[in-house]
Length: 199
Image (cartoon, rainbow, N blue to C red; front, side, top):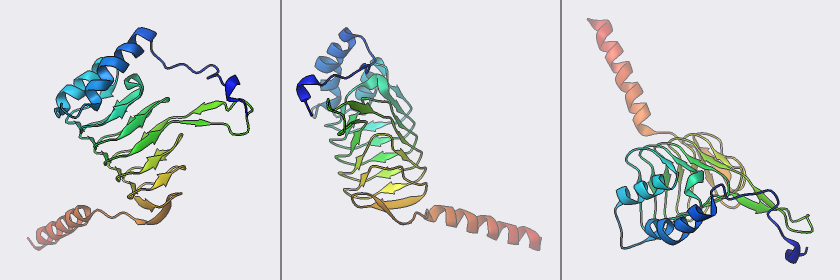
């Protein structure tokens, strides 16, 4: 391959040049800073630069976001220390998702068969109530199903099924996720039904 001939083709960053510069020198520094622990300030900064972010989102120190205008975050999301959202393409993180420390969301790949190493961007979608554990990596085009878990250091290059726990590189399903409180709620409903039938 010839990297001297590399171009991004028809890809664009999705924002005017002035906005990119302002983000790089001001906004990105505020989000990444370790001396500013306040999530509210970081959320407001991301919104000001075009991110769509819900309520009660927690952003820890050291977080990096490439392009906030290509980021959608739901409610009650936790984004851990040193998470890198490398969003050349859009990243959607639904409500009640936890991204633990050092998670890397990679939305760009290259065609290794192309002589000029052509860029291939693709979005990432992380559905509600999923947990991406520390030091995990999610690749371009991946959808993480609702309630799925990617364990410590896992690498997901393919989409993850809902309510399934994955581990390893490449990530493989190891078992189903069962939330204990759901079982308790079902038992409470059953117990109440039995009591009502006695009356």
